Length: 314
Image (tube, rainbow, N blue to C red; front, side):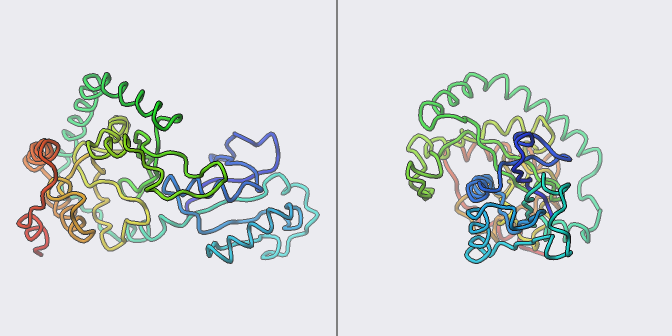
């Protein structure tokens, strides 16, 4: 299980970290907190209540039961499960913990995946050096452009300017992929949940098409969470355990799947191309991807059936 955070009714806990886990808010706010996490790619499927259920407000209890009934969220009430005394005072400070098992299938598969590295240690060492040098150079050269995009985003959709989504990185470890925001708030003034098509602004649509929204990922490369070249990081729900081998390398800003069809490819074709890259990663392949990325940016995506067929060969 991956713990997404803790809910606490104690005022002194708010905004703090408890044993490396963030205090996300109060138990009464569990539903909007879950919606906010979902926007960032964190899907909650289990809630652990660490205090007697009767100590929670009636509204909170009603919300928990509705989440269990309608959204199939597993609800664990520790006092019922272990027969704990409801009068325990020590436990009253920590009211609820939210956990997510999104990574469990991936990590289970990784634990049985062979440790063999397809690329040589020398290639990995020099590739990391190339990533750092390229990221620093790109950050310096693109700083004016990034400042301009940030200003446009602020005027278009407001604060915050940077948006993050949690995605599985190398060997399934979660990373926060950074992007410029391209959507308005997830809810309208009446609290109604808006569809993605309603939230995406015309300017945001242009930023996505030109891939300018992904410029902040240069920072992910500098931090060692991503590479310039590699399989694109997927949302946890889209990362099938069948293709877990694509997590053997750092996710990239651009990759073999992106230059051979990108958004026009099926999930299976993307996975086949990513797995081909993991098996054949080299300086020559990386250079080819860089050159094809320039072509893709200038002339748009085009599907290369030959590359797909080659990737599907045993």
